[in-house]
Length: 243
Ligand SMILES: [Zn+2]
Ligand SMILES: [Zn+2]
Image (cartoon, rainbow, N blue to C red):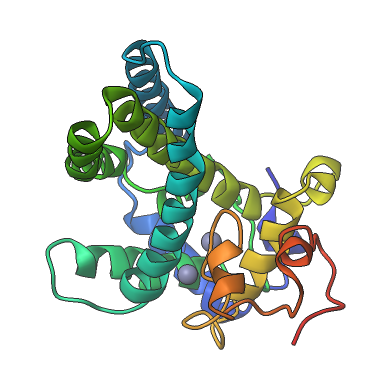
């Protein structure tokens, strides 16, 4: 991992926030264990959902793109209306604190990188978040089961869980050192620039709210680039179309 003390251009305010935050992370915290639990839970859930599929017919797969789009808009809404605004329903204030008051102070457009795996604490959701999202998913899955088929319900859960893992993975890719792979990998390179711009505290409450693919940002005109949907999705590191 990099030595941020020597190479970073972050402000002294960000540096002192990082020091303070790291000092209050409990000694037993292990970043690699945190991430392993998230992916192990995710893949176990996916395996369970897949095992329940039974002779899927082609039309049933149409729930996948519909759910994909639903998740994209949900992610945009959650980020804009809960992660950046202090709300009063259960858990909302903790999500706001963790994201706006911690994640956005720890990482700014001047310094987006983790210095070690211990910094994963301020980026990945807590491991139980996936369980909470899965429990929330039971109600729409149940409705899909009664209206359509069990396969449609399981495919819905497969897509929501996959999107959760994609979210965590792509957000992780935004906070690592630049390298050949992330610079050239379609969608990941787009999100890295998109999310780095979002970390500018002057625009964080209104621009670039997607954390996977900037589809809802394009749709609601909250992207900082002015391009077609395809151009926005495949923008990469380009700053040519910034409004
Ligand atoms: Zn971030
Ligand atoms: Zn944010």
